[in-house]
Amino acid sequence: MTARECRPDVLIIGAPKAGTSTLHAALAQHPQIYASPVKEPKYYICWDAPPPSYRGPGDAHSNQEWIWRRADYEALFLGASDDALRLESTPFYLYMPGARRRIAEELPDAKLIVIVRDPIDRAYSNWMHLWVEGLESIPDFVEAWHAEDHRVAAGWAPFWHYRRLGAYGEQLADLFRLVARERVFVLRYWQLVSHPDKTLKRVARFLGIAEDHVSRIPPDNARPFVEPGVRASVLGRVIRGGASAARYAPPQVWRRVSKPLVGLLQHGGPSQRPKLAPEQRTTLLGDCVDDIAILEQTLGESFEDWRSAAGRGSFAERTQAAQS
Image (cartoon, rainbow, N blue to C red; front, side, top):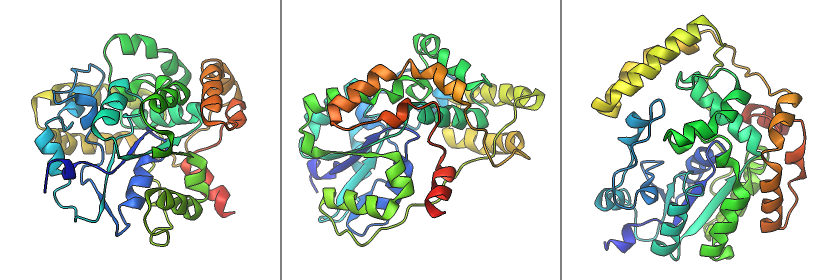
């Protein structure tokens, strides 16, 4: 098998917290797909060099899991049969300009899948993920959103870029300057969650594989909400301190050590996460409207629902609504 054959035929490139893991897991069940055993190798961010020394909580630990050596990346696809489509999913590829350029240069025939989600709902889910894991120190989402510029300047990793990750208009406009439009499939988060059978058939049609093998998506793995307070503050500091020290140990060691701490943090928390209040969304919409307009112009469709003061809801809420 040649080195060229060991590279992916399909990439899910974005966006984080917009259903990329769900789609990856669903497509991995298809007999004509070989999914990378490492779901987010982040290879095309690295340019065959170690990842940057990001400085946010847990970043140094996370950096150890990036696959940046070409031989290691190509080894991910050695198990694929000759006729299988090789799939890799790293939702930060859409966001990172260097990754967009590198993919365009090195994978001229690969098909790319993008999932876009209401940028405020996406960012809220992103913040929630980090908060319930004890890594986010700011218990108020709006305040954390406004802390982004300082954090980016301080060298925090892309997953902390709550606002910037949702600027799909700029990202897609640049991607389409590098890659032929027909190679890119853009779908909306609500389509995947609310109409999985129909959406998975559309994805299969785009990839040129059989449409009747995968019709369901896996359930959400949402964790209990962590109420702000003394316990969250104390345990959060311990978890963040441990994650910082974990740069000196293999990542699997920290995952094993941190699991009971995170479990204690989440213990007894309500399964229903609080919704963003309309006034919170309204506060943040001004940061999004210009890019929403760029996205509408780029894709030629309306995203007027994203300008609403009411959010579109979580995975669980959308799934429940679709089933009712």
